[in-house]
Length: 346
View (cartoon, rainbow, N blue to C red):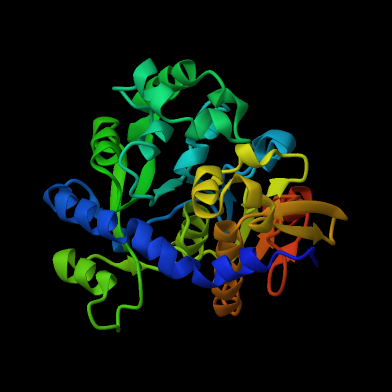
């Protein structure tokens, strides 16, 4: 249920696809051209279709939304002995590894030159870099990242130890730093192209990518959590996918400053107009209010469309137990109920 008058926020949602393309399209193409030299390290994503990934026909997505630190889904997943496929965003990698869970597949997508490598451990991270970017310490995320240098050392060590056991769906749009780190950690690489726009359009960036390398193009829904779901449903061919940590929103008490796109919002509308950008939504399943920004609202709308398109072959259950990702055809249930169902099936 939408609350309040957030006309500007909804106007931005309507333009978010174009804004996102303007923001990342050029860097995604540039990265793909650079990464072309590394494509012989690893395989095409299509090779994953022939592999057994997890037991049975179900999967669980572990993303890194703010519910993760409140709900701690890995504890229940481990306690119940779930053996289906675990597909994790790169942002949830530290959360998984520090809890002794080796994901069956990790996914990375974002082309940002310096930030995304931090999820894998940045060998060059120092205090000067931290002072220049408050992205991690500002957000309501895994508290392990509060001490950034310590967290960086932890994920560096964990991934060095376990990287060789982990498959990664590595987007050709990934930065030079991410690709180098993934190769360094000896992760098992499966390359793919993100669908940046409609490939049937003239001058399509997606068409340029496919012409460049011939790799499969995947509709990632604009974000890595949705990309994980697409990998589970369309590549691993799982008939049931449960979501955790996919809030697409913030808890009502979260300060605006602690949201992911805070600086972008300030630059766009000014500090005095911030409240006009954010959208308040009540989750009727848990009778709790959340708020979201135009980017996450767009991700939500795109995900609902993707899930509806796949509904005949893949059921989607949101087990985040919070946030705003609900609506037909998504089933909003507890993680316990999902595990009851699929541990019995597997």
